[in-house]
Length: 112
Image 1: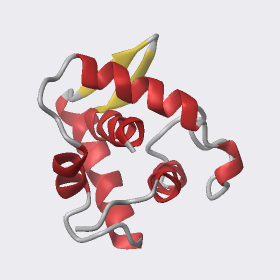
Image 2: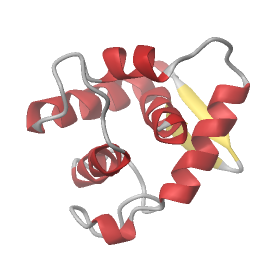
Image 3: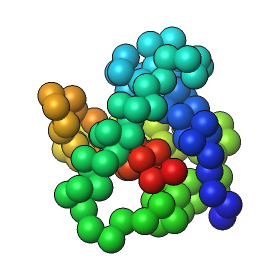
């Protein structure tokens, strides 16, 4: 799989916001990259990576986007994020509660 650009990863966050998965921290207006906080996403990603060892961008990309990052891939991310919340797969950072999928996406942004 080819490397995903930071822009495309941020678009995935916007897509998750449009699906109602994430909060206003990442997508106040779904579909608009101007509202995506790439610095904040990278900070969350670094915090997630700090409590895990040996995680690589390649492994995260392969797991989060097994078939690429098209509309179906974004929908699949949304389903995974909802499943994370349903099973208690939560990552907490500075008072924010994110699904593990969202936190892993932030980690990929931090690594890109």
